[in-house]
Image 1 (cartoon, one colour):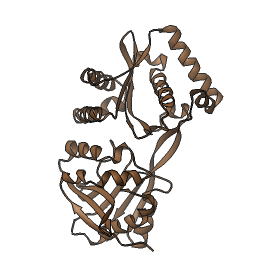
Image 2: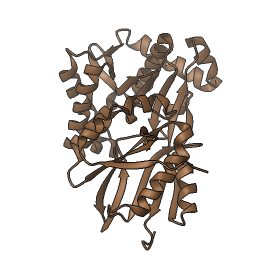
Image 3: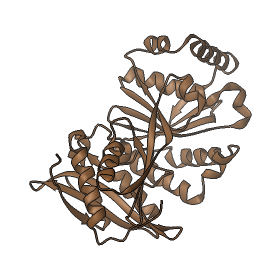
Image 4: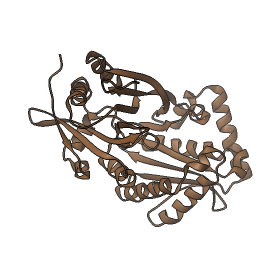
Length: 340
């Protein structure tokens, strides 16, 4: 039996300054860099054109117990609700709330969908971690309310729980992957003894961002086409904002002072997030991306970081480095009378 929550709507970006946001993140087991109000605000400021904002706050006894940041956009003739953050740029989506409140929040969200004056045809909720995530509670409540829905596993993320020391990390890899990693590390040390990993600083950030974007655009295939002007602008805005907060990790593997691989990530809480990466195609033989990420893992272990989150994508190197796959679900809920 769920306890009814009261739902209010905030429709301006001021909602990203709700004082309770940080306290709710501290209670949310799925909290991440992507649930921070700073991430929401930056994404909304960059991609809000053609969208309507609906940030739901849910209260119990006048205390905010959940924030559900949504936007609405017309898509193929349908009015579609999605979580703020979109699909492509935000690896984890969902409400911000404690685990014990998820069923109540799912119930309140379904009640709101059924009673709201906000016009909608579909609620398209992506990138929700499972198992025991919000998607499962929302499925239960939508089914109970006899709403049509479709649930699919659309993606996986790759998460590496870090041990207390580097030797223990190496021992956790299977023998083949451990051998390959050591072999590749020895090769670059032997052929390029001046190879070094360098972290960006506030003083080098502007130049480093230019190197990162150019290297990304030089990548073969779809990855190279991903870094459109608006995406590059978003990366640059995130980098500058998160650098000031101490959250940015922009790192390079360099030979002779020239970058051959780069990673763009975040350090937040006790987690290091690998958000994006690129390498120079001419240096592919050296496995520069793998070498750089392994160096970041080694640094994270030394610092006592608990989790190295390689985020979405099935790239083989993530699992070579010992990460475990975590499924992400896409749940689509349809307004009564709308065909799915």
